[in-house]
Structures are given as structure tokens and as C-alpha cells.
Length: 284
Image (cartoon, rainbow, N blue to C red):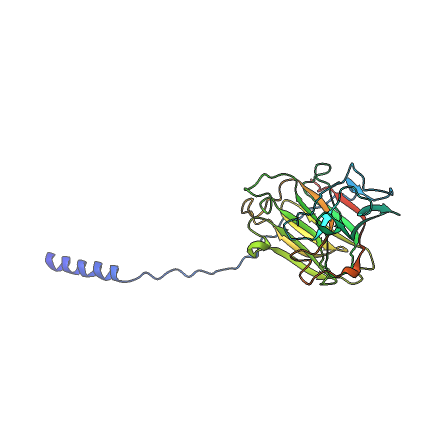
């Protein structure tokens, strides 16, 4: 009897080991993505330039990037320094003017004005009212770059770029907003960008803005949103936008993008006009 009991026990144990247990039934629920925290902004700008004094841009607010190095894009213009022909204020409007003229090794002059070192910003609502110039070969932009180099080994793209507005003349009426970082940039084909079309873009002034917060960057034209980039929370390679940036406004000629279909020399002088630039603080 004892031997028979042992045999039956062994068979029972072997049978239990050979059977796969039935897995429990699990209901899988797809949870919606958690939306980013929403922020609000002050209703009165804490920094602004209304361009209400004729002459050169206010030197307390604006400096100049100068030269004809191509600016990493094989651009054709020479950016001048405090040259009233290329950047001047008249009747409450700033005009950045590109001119066809010999300047060093360049055949065009223009201006690129910047707030770097004078007015650098961390978060906020940045808004400009502008009228875009028409013409094949021009490349106007309102954008932001880091005011310091805290991340990575390269100033760009490691420290970030925010494009509030870009337009290339050969693609009339198509407006672009983008961000560039080490992980997301056009050089490696991962750039985060959006486009929208705009009526009366070269005959009327429109408002271009970004809302920059710790959790998202959104772009708008005339208060209509068309771009959003949410903080991936994956480190500075994806989101270096927790450091100060400065504003740039320029009118480039030609280049890898703006000059893809050549430059029409009949468009000069070519004028990029800005009515105001305002920065609203992020509310606590």
C-alpha cells in the first residue's frame, strides 16, 4: 500500500508540473495621455518695443549680429551694424530692409537685430505684429536662441532654438513655426515644426506669437494656434528650454532654404516691417 501511494503521488506531481496554469483574464484599458499643465500670462507686457521713436532701433533694447559668414545656411547677405539704411524706425514701424549693393564679398546688405545681453527672457508670451515681405529669395524670421551655452558641446542645436515665424519667398503665404534641439532638428530629420497658410500676408500686419512655459511651447497667428511641442521630460537633449533666450529679427537673402529657387533681384529693396514686439510674463 505504501509503495502504491508513492507511485500515485509521483504520477500526480508529474501531471501537475506538465500542465501550464491558465493565466488570469486581464482587461486592458487605453488611458488618454495626460495633458500638460495649463498656464496663464500677464495681461500687460513687462517688456516691449513699440518703435515709436524715429531713427535706429533703441540701443538699450537691441544690438546687431553682423557679417557675411553665411550664418550656417550659405546666406548671401552682409548683416550691417547700426546702418540706418538696413534697420530704421519711421511712423511707429521698424523696417528691416534688404538692399542689393556690394558690401565686402556680398552683393546684398540687410540687418539682424537681437536682444541678447540687453533683454534675455525665461518663459513668457512673446508677440510681434509684422508684415511679411514678398519676393523669391527672401527669408524673414522672428525667432529665439539661447543666451548662454549650458548644454552639450555645441551652442546650436544643443541649447535650443524657438522659431516664432519663418517664411521663404518662393513659397508665398506659407508660415512656419518650429523648435530645434539636439534630439529634434532638421539636420537629423527630426525637427518639430508646423505650417499654416495666411491670407493678405504681404499687404497687412498680423500678430505672431509663442507661449513658452515649462511644459509646452505653442505658436499662434492672429491668436489661432497651429503648433505645439510638449516637454517630453527626457532631459536637455529634448528640452533645453529651461534657460534664458533672446529675440532675433532678421531678413536673410538666399541660403540653403530661402534660396532653393534662386533670388529675384527685381524685389529689392525688400522690406520686413514690424509694428511692435511685446513680452508678457508667465503667471506664477
